[in-house]
Each structure stands twice: as C-alpha cells, then as structure tokens.
Length: 139
Image 1: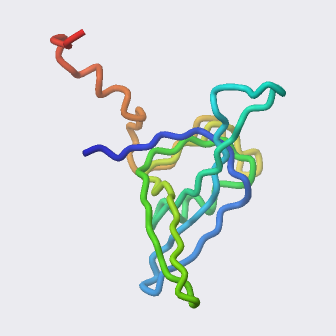
Image 2: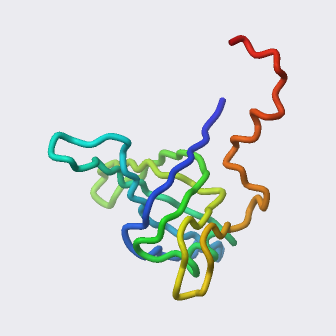
C-alpha cells in the first residue's frame, strides 16, 4: 500500500500551534493549491487542504511559516472522525506532513529561497527513486 502526497501551495493564514495533554506539539494550517487548468472565466480553481505537522516539525513550521508563504510538503492523507456534544459525527481529511520545503524567501527572518525544513536533509520529493531502478522496465 502507498499513501504519499506531494503538494505545492500557499498558506491561507498563519499556522496555529497547540499542545496535546502529553505536551506534544501539533501545528495546523491550510494550504491553497491551484489546479492545473483554468475555467472559462480565466480563473484557476483552488483546493484548500488541511495540513498537520507534529513534534519538532510543528515547532519549525510555527516559527517559519506565515500567511502567503509558498511551500512544498510531503506527507500522507489521514481521515478521522469524532462525535460532537450533540452526538453528530464529523469527518475530516487532512495531510499529515513529514517534510516541508520553503519555495520563496522569508524576508522577515532573512532566509533565502529554497530553504528546507529538516526531517530528511536529502529531500528529493521521492523522484530520485526512479534513477536507481533497473533498466528492465516493461515499457
């Protein structure tokens, strides 16, 4: 089975950092991702994706990301549900990010473009996996 997501988009607002009862940091934000086509009126449809980062990556995201920031993320899709106080079931689908890469400059922090948030310092977004494959491909 494979559950891997790669997204590039802009934050719709500043990230929110919270802590679990066990004091584990969790950061959430929404990423606006444009689709690859335009509508008849010339506008591009946009998907708004809920993103969650945990632990050290949550702290790094909270300290470095702001509304409008262009980033790339690698993660996995997770769907969860809960019941509210009235007994109504709610569902949410979100991306749990494992890696974040800055794609623009953060002038406030003095960071240059293409700054990567660690988890995998040799990030290639999974594309280099194909370079190591055998030449015996079926096509």
